[in-house]
Image (cartoon, rainbow, N blue to C red; front, top):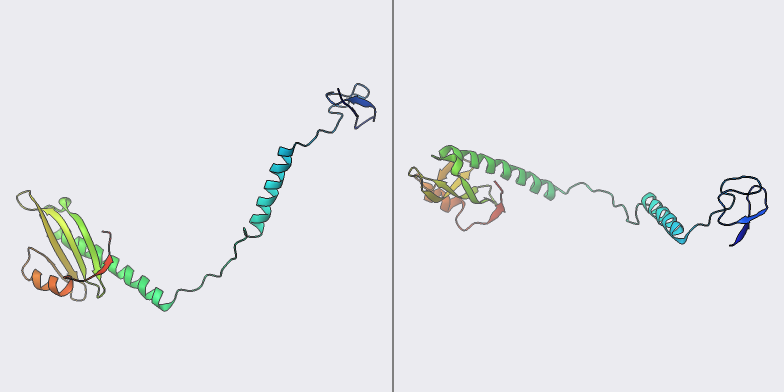
Length: 166
């Protein structure tokens, strides 16, 4: 049994004593700090310092978008709006609008919206079809409508564009 001195009266007591037998002081000796306690304390201090100093990352000022980025963002917004309009026009043209499944939709670089879709026909069978919406003229056509081939060849055939998720 090891001996230490009481923090109150200074007399020798056992390190396992809960109360000093001389003066009655509870916890009469200093408790040793374990290595785990020191490790946790240092970790907390490191986290606080890192948070205060910004975590070691340099803060870059946020720059304003370039005119090209602004134009691209505006074009994307317009393409999405036109895509939604094309979808609405397509739904209005179908016999069974609930059966619509759009497989592919994209906006060409000149803003034409091209759609590949499936929908039920009047007999209940599924048709695979196409639709085109030309925002500049407001023209809309599906592959079942007169004049579709000319519009499709003008606006969508062999063209690439931005994919739309409608």
